[in-house]
Length: 176
Image 1 (cartoon, rainbow, N blue to C red):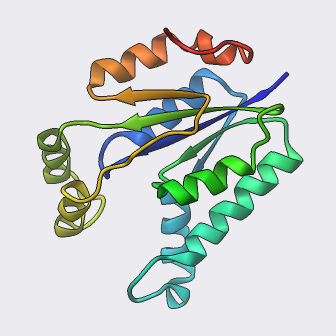
Image 2 (cartoon, rainbow, N blue to C red):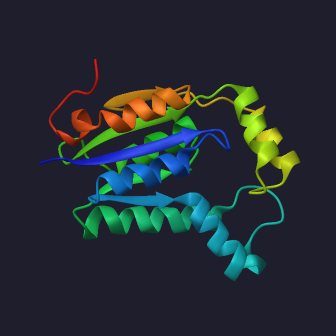
Image 3 (spheres, rainbow, N blue to C red):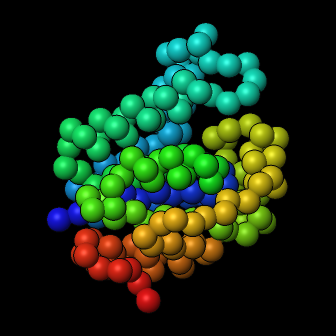
C-alpha cells in the first residue's frame, strides 16, 4: 500500500499550519513536518548560526533530515508544511518519494490578497512589513503531483477536511 505525502504551499498567513494540524488530528497516521516549527526552534536555540540575510539553509537542512528520517524509518503518511519551494526544489522533494511507494498530493493555498493582509493585521506571528512583502510577492506555480488541490476560501478548506476519504484510499486518483 502506498503512503501519502501531502505538501502545503502558499503565502504567509494562508492557514497551512492550521490545516495540517487539523488533518493530522483527523488521521493519526499523518506526521506534520512544519518548517515554521524548525525556524522557531533554530531562532530560539541556535540564533548565532542563522544567516543575517539570504536563505536559511540550516532550516532547509533540518527539514530535509527530518523528511528523510520519516520517509526511511517510519510507515507514517507525511504532511510537509510551510516548505514554500521553488519549482526546482519541489521536483527535488518529489524525487525523494518513489511513485510506487508514495502518493503525492499538493494543497496550494491561494487565498485572496486582501484576506491574507487582514490576517497579518490581526496577527503578531511575524513582523508586519515582512509578512506584507511575502503576501504581495511571488506566486507559487505547481505541477508534477499525483493530485493538486487549490484552496481559495475557508469553504474550500472545510470541504477538503470533510471529504478526505479520496486521498486516504491510497489507490484512488483523487477528487473529480
